[in-house]
Length: 430
Ligand code: ADP
Image (cartoon, rainbow, N blue to C red; front, side, top):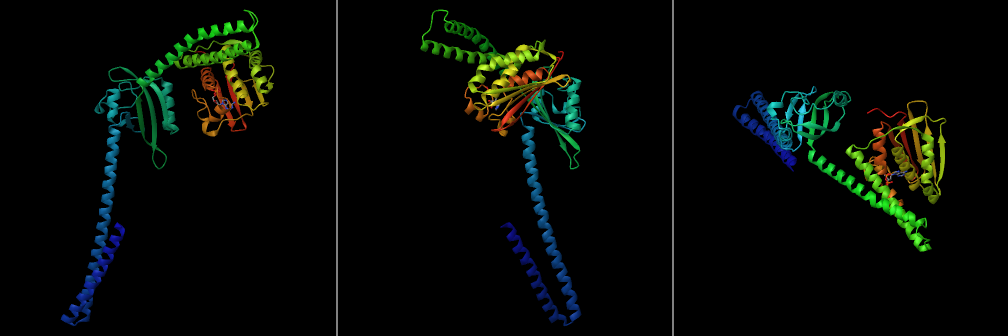
């Protein structure tokens, strides 16, 4: 609409100019009757009209550019206002970490006033930060300056008054057209309260699990005594019902044990006690343990081991938990009569590689990034096995990480999954 109006004005102006031209040439012809004079005046008029139109167009364009600039400025002011008043601490530094801008959130979180920090180096001890190790800062600068990648981390920080707080920090390099770092934007969030609540929740889970363990152990003993006819023979129904109680109680004990492991991992109190272990013997004991589940699912287990396998330093209980989780998952998520391959390889390096492969339901691509998250279960797995708790892989991943090993998988929906664990033969020294 606006554009059409402009065209009409433009055409009107040009036509108007020509009309004036015609009119003036008519007047001059009457007054002077000299063709050459009339021609000169016409040219002058024509040029001035053209100039007038050009100036009009130019002014129109300038006004349009000005309106656009004003709009951008307004947008920028809105954006600056939002950044200034954001509750997170937002700072911009040059490529050497010298602070160029800080928002209002910075004072709220750290206690420092903008004038006290501008021009200083971010992360220095006299500001907030600087509490981490040299390696940490090397890693950070390599990520943001050399690799030009975003760096996100949670760490303990301190305010101006010395009070400690937990910060979730994300630093992003902003690059120019040539791909060079122009400056860095850092967003720090104070997550102290969230962490406190999380800790209280973990401590509650730990306490509740401990308290549950004792009555569950009693139920196990007494149902075992009943099943062993220690208090006289049971009728068929009585035996079936007692067996049900026993089975359900076993599931509950597994869940409570997993919850205890998770809370210990989250609280950092899980101790890894390494002892030289015959890995093959440990694996054979484990296979015996999952035997009934394999029989129930009619699953065939193919074992492939390098020989001789080295004696490795293991926490036997945790190793049991890890492999049991992988094997039971492979069985649970396999089809009836499926096939599972368990491989242990050691190529003479400092690690052993354990591989558990199945041809079961697989993990959908959309769920693969979350599969190590606490309590996460994929929908296809829920349909096959409604009873899982989504804690197993979280435990495996956390324990393997603590042993400085590696844990990863390959999977295709409806085709199967292969989980790999690489463990150091010697546990790292604390
Ligand atoms: P749970 O098996 O009790 O659900 P886990 O933590 O052991 O908990 O596993 C988390 C999720 O990972 C499962 O719910 C399932 O979606 C997926 N998963 C694990 N192992 C397999 C497997 N072998 N095949 C397919 N999906 C698997």
